[in-house]
Image 1 (spheres, rainbow over the protein chains, first blue to last red):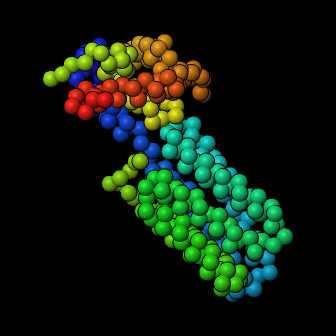
Image 2 (image 1 turned 180 degrees about the vertical axis):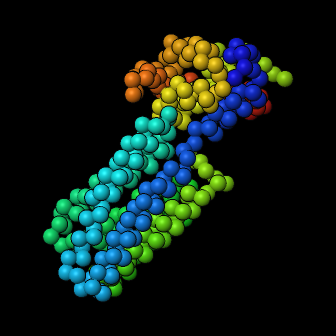
Image 3 (image 1 turned 30 degrees about the vertical axis):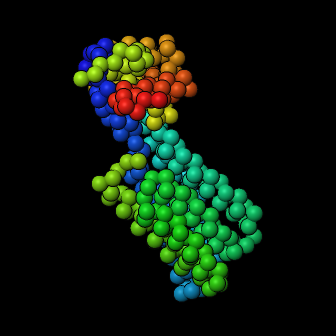
Length: 195
Length: 100
């Protein structure tokens, strides 16, 4: 930046303002880690449970969901490391984080309330998961994520009508199109990397 | 080309305007981040940050992270208000026919 006391023209002032505002945009690719991490984790859990239940007749197939516990810790550690490394915090980034934090808290409450009938809770979790996905899509102006959120709600309806027995396959499909596809698109996006 | 001296003198300076424009969209930023984005020298940046702080446009917090000092800056309500006024005044100067 040149001599700070130099008299500027209006055009120069506008150029500085727009140049600086453009630099403060939230890097939307930051969000792809969680989409891919949770997308793969839940996809593997739901598919494993389906296979164990239907092809191995394993009575406690729901044990695979215990993988979610270390998953929470990995997310927390990742969030803590990236948060400490960050040299600035944008309002968009903060809102993005709190939307997902709100979902995590609501999902935990739902699990506690429905701890005796975990099978019946799955459609509600998907219903709930659609909201942060949908809102995040709007926040970062990324249509595949908006579509992903809508897909969660379609899957919730499909499970409701097809019977809760289909929830593991439904959840796997929701992860594939709701998190993984938008997650990879977000990660590889180079033409519009900030909002 | 029109030159403006009537605009808020605190903001009508290249580096101070750059700092405020950067902070307007950020909740909080480290001194090093502002230095990187503005391309200013540490000394010059410190002086301009102090001027903005004295005017009440920004808030400066000193902390320690991993035993290293850390300076954090954020825009105040007054800073937001002054920036909005500056942008409005600038619009009037750039579009004199559309003045209120």
